[in-house]
Amino acid sequence: MALKLSFGLLALATFASAANFRRVACPDGVHTATNEACCVFHSLADHLQTITFNFTCGEDAHEALRLTFHDAIGFSFMNEALGGGADGSIMIFEDTELMDPANNGVDDAIDNLRPLLTMFDISAGDLIQFAGAVAVSNCPGAPKLEFMAGRPNATHPAALGLVPKPEDPVDMIFARMEDAGFSPTELVGLLASHSIARSDTLIDNRQAVPFDSTPFTFDTQIFLEVLLAGQESQTLPAAAGEVAAQVPNPLVAQGEMRLQSDFAIAHSTESNCFWQSLVNDQNNMMIHFHDAMAKLAVVGQDTSKMIDCSEAIPEPVPPVAKPATFPAGTGPELLQLSCTENIPFPSLATDPGQATTIPECPDGDINLNDCPS
Ligand code: HEM
Image (cartoon, rainbow, N blue to C red):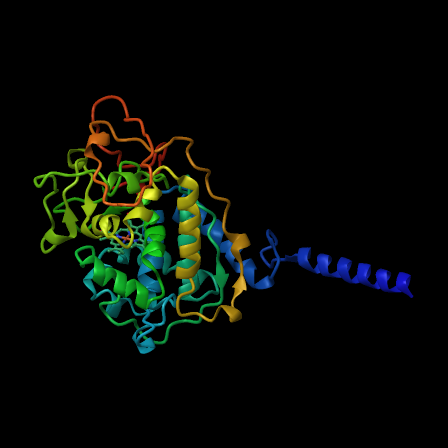
């Protein structure tokens, strides 16, 4: 009897493990998937990598990542009628949502991605979150993000005013994020995204103005460089109406800008110690970004009805093996630290040589479509 029972258990365990590992052949004849519903995302990943992003962490990849936030943050726990979160509304109701100045510049990513809706049988919300996760996999040092499939298409636009603006007071930003389910710490985790970010709209007559000295690498330089004190004159000429979006930074001559919001979050008592702790802590930055992005990607969605298709996200490019450094021309004397907890600041080297202009193209990228003209 005991023998019979253990055979039964063994058979059950074998069946369960076979079920776990059984893959279905996808209709494209190329891929296999754990769930047939993921097949389309394997094909989409191939298309995004070869055609849209060209396997690089360039402008198109940066913009796709930004779009994930601008779609998902259109949600309010206080009033759920205001928006459906990560539901594709920013693409479906582009004309309405892009009237919000906080969405300036996201039209490029929408224009890039929208044609894929006619090529692949997926919703706009799935397309946006999937494309962002694939995009970031091209950036050395990014974690592999999760992807849950199954967002129904939005039926109405998100209300204007739900996306934080760089000139907003920090308490207003925290309140907005909390209303969408995010703590100040989670926001700092999300802001690792500004490690691969450049502005096209805030500086007069200039595009692709980076937020840190390594805008094609998902590293912790952003957390360090935002902590370097700038003098009053160290700002770039602002585009019309954007003076308050920017605060001084000492790398202005190298072409860098600093968002008022990043600066304020780096110094608020609610987030300054955590911000500071991420300097030169690649692993922790990756973990916190991964977890906060997993949450962001499903804001407003019923995850019990979604299917985990994370397997379709490419393996990310590994981190560059270089610790954070003070860019040439700066140094520890410029550190502006406001965390009063007893957290030792890492001892970092300074890049040798003269201060140089921050490159405008990813290293080795010969596809100039990804570079600013
Ligand atoms: C307090 C919250 C945030 C504010 C105020 C903010 C503001 C901005 C602004 C003003 C820009 C420049 C846009 C332009 O001129 O082209 C920008 C770029 C960017 N943001 Fe944010 N952001 C926030 C949070 C986030 C989050 C949570 C993500 C992603 C998860 C994100 C990802 C990006 C990326 C990747 C870019 C670069 C886009 C490019 O290079 O074309 N941001 N952000």
